[in-house]
Image (cartoon, rainbow, N blue to C red; front, side):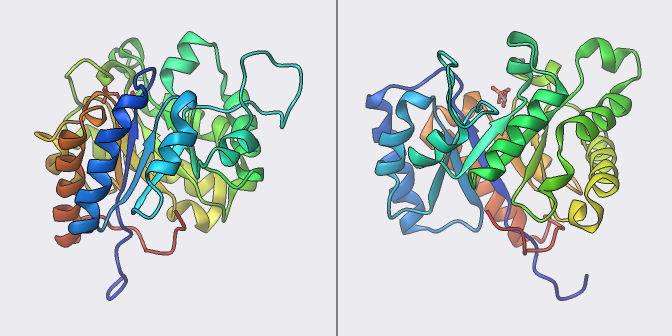
Length: 269
Ligand code: PGA
């Protein structure tokens, strides 16, 4: 809409099962770099749960936020090894990645379970980042858009309308492989996700940031952020090196200065 400010891009670092206490020094340096040259992007680090509390302390007073990598649907109980959304919140998280393909595949998480986790996250005042994406076989079978529609419909609870929420398009075959879809393919996927979000959440679906994830690097971040409909990035490997991650954040700054994140700015982060 003319005159309407673009939403700041959301740049999320997913550390997966990487990171020790010694790695917090890089986060302090990232925080300091963003303090001396503030970013227009919302920047979130999702470390392993063991580091969440210390990382949340290390980023206090900086523009950084942090999040978990999954949460259990129940608030507490006899679930050995699991972590609830409230516990993540208690440890300082504001966000949580849900339904990552490594959890859908490795832990058998279904759309229904992802939706239950998203519901639990919202109840604990965490902003879910719900991941969707096709496998290589689905892509080769020309089923990408059907898979995305059905994952959005199954994983995004209608109750999350008007709650902070992001969806990440992560083609499974692009994660950790160095391969990325073409800009045109990303645009097509994001547009299908947007249509599904609107049919699921009504007008609120047009406000949800849709991120891209899968082999994002400082070298391709600008090009991906320039794709219409891309509202941010979910970064795995390149988020482990704070300098590389900072370069990606700076690419997002340049993109928002060019007005390339088309969503309105009223989505809370
Ligand atoms: P990658 O991981 O950037 O290392 O491909 C992305 C992700 O899995 O979220």
